[in-house]
Length: 315
Image (cartoon, rainbow, N blue to C red; front, side, top):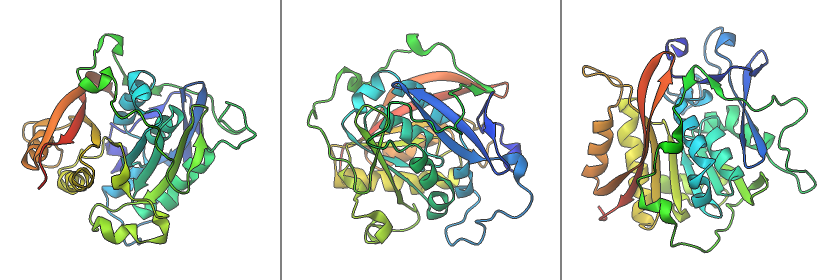
């Protein structure tokens, strides 16, 4: 099933072990390196199949998706400047590449996903990119591959893709935010990162009391980031409900949702862009297009959009 998903993104010159493929991205003078599941190594039943939180959709968190690269490209410019010094919660972090790049750009990032994804890959990827107080700007270890651009995914020159959001003009919230509890420094711009298990099917309040939350409350964030996490229809409403709950608890927060439209006119499984817009409208959210571009994935051209979502009324 994984192999049938051409949207899964890898690099031209990755480093591969028996179980993982290591992928790197350069940002703000440092290298962020993460492991993702090696599809060629899959030999049988998923080792996390018996975990209580296991779902087929959730298991794709061990992979890397093109929506992350769209956001990473934006983080190298104005989006990175916007998020610097701000608190950011990433929903469905998966391997964590986008969230860690946001940390390298200077944000304080709380990366969240299912417990099995944290234990299986995300915690290790955050630890891999932690900068010790004595380290230099080089974030890679001796075993880390050099930074690369993704193969099989081509982006047009985004320099002419003007950001249409008012947020690009600056942020009125100028005070520096505090790092999340349990954070480690990432990069050289003052950013930090930590993880927290967050299952969209479980009430948020119930999860905040768990020791793994470290006392962190995602609603105390400035921004919410979600990269390519609602491609299946079954994921759209649960994710929307979490976003709306966080926005209701902190109406000043803004959600940035990166979405690649994979749906055809007769699609029964894939979410369309129109469906994304509709469910957030139904929840009383205002939406503004932050960025739009075409992305070529394995020979197919897809429309990638980043939506800026905010709350216009409490529900």
